[in-house]
Image (cartoon, rainbow, N blue to C red; front, side):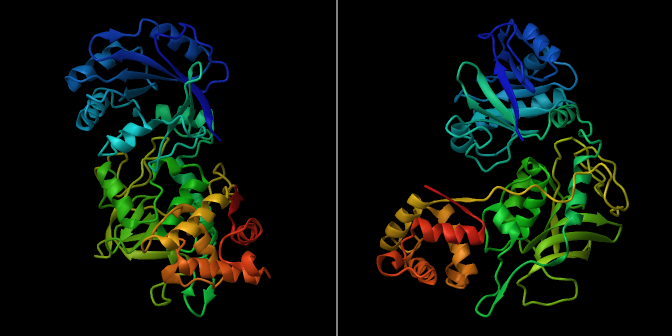
Length: 478
């Protein structure tokens, strides 16, 4: 579920229509010389409607410390209001942006501080991915709630039709207010506990299939949910756990251990200490699991693409299992310590945890919380494959250079399904190129469905693709 909101400036009415809006962002200042004369009445209208209020500062080239001081002094904020830096002026460098965010946070440490920018700024000018407490992204080319970026986001400005329209990535208005004020969520259960209860609800068992050529095949419901099946899935499992309970905004969507490690270090969310819900980097990028408990000696983790304690499988991994590791083991490289949207720090062993928690010597899961989210997640949306784009890839990729990719995202999904059918070898699946071997594999699939002649030439058709999607969990679109 997404929450609706708007953002206004001095160009809009002093009493904007906020009917049905869960939040309202209001321009307060610009540079060190402009104050929105209507911000007080605009904020009053939003508060009267029960909306969460945020104020933004339009950054201009110049002294960032002076702009931060001007912003917090002149905006009409109270406790629980969100503060935002609006980065649209190309004369403001990425370093300036970072300095301004940090300066505002230092002046107002109890407030949530966000970055607003366009998709073009985020992808083309930003080099640090630093956005303090979260990102508000402007992208008008994609539907509400689906901005075309990989970085976690909290707000999406998707339209400028009449008034700027936005959505927030929170399940309920109560959850948004809890995040803004740093309290617990609407159920009274902290985010970290909701996550932990869900992780612990996942049955420990083998989830992969087996075939003689590849061994364990990485074909799992977790890969299907993520949209990248048939590949190594330890980080995919960790992301799915957050996604299932609506907390994926605070972790990166990646399938790579090194990638989430770099992401965490760039945001000050890397730790040498375990905390509940943290993602562990094992053996400097070899594997990942989620922390579910710890004591002074050990860290307890649960993860996918792993093996049952004491078992062996030649290093492939096959299911979801719980493990105990020495905290001092050289296998434990470190932890991504996520900042949960409600602002509540989970049980942590870090004596200086930047999320504000007090270190504890141990934590053991006590069992399902009565008010926690039900353990069974809502069905995940199926990944989609465009038939027209796939046909273009099947015709163009074999003619290009080795590894040529026309439609990598959709081809990866189809390759994973062909591999699961035993029609495409593991080493050729998942590269996103619809090369000659993939064409041959798809032709075998077509013949398996009793197609012949041109209908079995390896170029996808609507019936064969829909049959593959129905069996392997993806949706076919034009």
